[in-house]
Length: 376
Image (cartoon, rainbow, N blue to C red):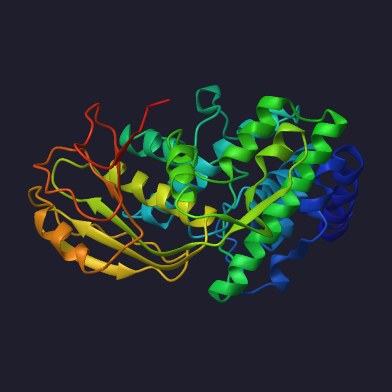
């Protein structure tokens, strides 16, 4: 039997034994990588572009039916968890980071599939210590501890969804809807535990416990409209075991995010701030948004026109004094300023606009709302 037929048979087997995956699997293109020259099948295994699954026929020929089914589901879950977007670009600073990221996302997906009672192929990346962790946390654990992980034979390269910002956002919204439908069916059929379902919902956006507080504070600044949106799931629906869109907010006019890039903030903390910003912008509607790198002054200011347009370079690394930046922002008339900092700073005079301080420090800022990042 040739590789093309084996892929089709695997798809049929998955739909019979794991019906809850139908919403994620059915829309996908399945194609031999020889017929898809635009796809980078970096490891000559199975890979995904976010819109399809592409396979190296020689690799498929080496797999048992069980291993092929697992790897197919594995690629489907990468798509469902939005691993095929540029939301993790800020992690890619050094040579070799791309492979570390591919391995980190594999750990996340394989843990979910093991939890769902699928048999992982020999050599697949799995470690119980990563259960419930985010991609960011696994990535930094591997990189910071210089963990040497042999490249598994099933490692697949994650391509990125291509298109205009509007097209990409439309695709992401559809994937979220498909995942929500899959989770509803999985719960009804008892295919996944409550913990697994909650984990899948959390992995849709960076799992940082304090982000809910940030999101709720930002949502409190405006009223909700009547249009349904899959950018946020309805909490009432979740409580009833059904995953539904929330009502879409009318939005904010201007949001300004500031990141303390002084020497007292390490790269991982700054990476967390970018990750949290992505989640916040996905959750609300907004007209204008700016990102500022700040130490003793504003080192760089960029406009964010789309959630996929977040910065990854770190500008600054000086001392910490926010006086100049806060004075500059008075003329901006922002709806809210959200500042990521360790609070090791002499605070400026309280401004006329709302300020939210996001910090790992146990201290509280003298004005504005302080939200503490709590370690899991």
